[in-house]
Amino acid sequence: MTTELGTGAERNRTVETVFDMDQTMMWATGLDPDEWILHIPSELRDRAWRDSEGQGHPGGRWTAFLNRLCLASFTQLWAELEPTGAKVSPWPSLATLPSCWEFTTGTALTLGSQRIILIPTENLDDSTLTIPQEWVDIPSWAGDYYVGAQIDPPAEQLQILGYVTHQQLKARGEYDAFERDYSIETETLIAWDGFQPSYRQYQPSDTQVALPPLTPPEPVQVEPLIKRLTKPGMVIPRLALPFSLWGAMLENDTWRQQLYSARRGQATVTVTKLSNWLVGQVEQSWQSLETLLSSPQWAASRQMRSPAPAETEPTQTLGKSLLEATPLVLSVSVTALESGAFRVLLKLDPATGQRTEAVTIRLLDEANAVLSEQVTAPTEMIRLQFSAERGERFNLEVLSGNERILEQFEI
Image 1 (cartoon, rainbow, N blue to C red):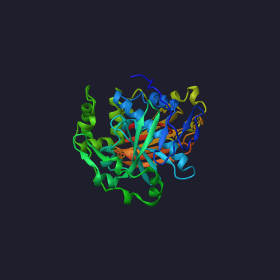
Image 2 (image 1 turned 90 degrees about the vertical axis):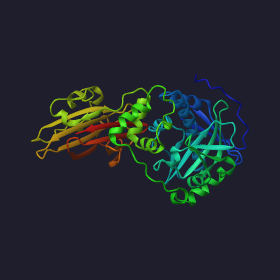
Image 3 (image 1 turned 90 degrees about the horizontal axis):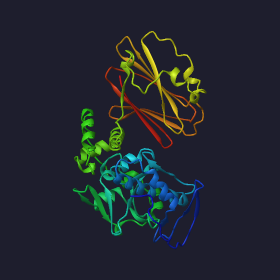
Image 4 (image 1 turned 45 degrees about the horizontal axis):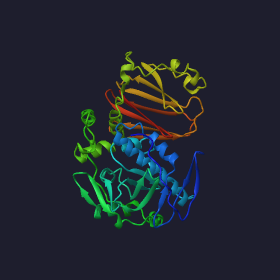
């Protein structure tokens, strides 16, 4: 497979609008409500293909490519339809969607309190829209509206087929237990030009069916399951486990990311054992703050250089650089308390003061439930402090722009 996907003649439009995208491409949108055909610029097509090269499997790359085209096309269309109204945003984030596309097709967008699921299809026969079960029956993934998009990369066009609500899909869709998907005839879809009045009128309680929670595997089962699902020759891991177990694996952000990393041939996330630091056992990726901050990159940092209060209990403080585009310094201090517990202090410092993206930091338990969350301005330092017992685990997730970092810890 090469990046040369071919080009095609652009179809005639009744209305055409031109956008400037990153000063490198032009955007043309067909707005005939009977067709809703969008033109895909060749520059966008080539960029989407390049951005998808990090997927772990050729099939995953093609899925990511189609979904990136669909996401960019729909986002630009929505900006035209609602120039001053509600915005759409990728869910969970643009940085984490590749871990979804590796295993199934579909892209989620938040629209206020509601969610749109974009389903791209290449089928020339557009009589049926097929929707993977993951986007329908995983409780935290389910959408309010499912939008079908027939996409033809060589012809550089995408056509919106219409939409259906979650309630309608569950009631009228045909479930295929072998393929694990729902299908619905496109002639029963609601025409796209009726979407805007609909989403303004209805709430999630009007469009969604309540779903039972999925039972997650025990944490000790996760690593063996990941190894099983990433064996050579495992082309379709989504069909290798009962759906209740598979859905729970995908629903957990940490486990899905580990599965994605293993699928790409990367090591799963290393667990940092903090109590070992107090006896001199330190993972190679961590450094003293003096060593870390001595590089020119961090010369402007002052917050982490400030003297720490004197500790009467044994304490160790180490740090590492996070993110690539606009780095942050993470420092972790662990203190052994007389009670036998440990105090943990986390600091996240923009250091250079050159960041432009806000930072979200989430403290998660071992099962990835959110214990706390902070969102700060680009140049503010984040500080978290808590106590934990030996053997307890927690995760730290850092999001900024399109970048995501997950650090796992054990006391």
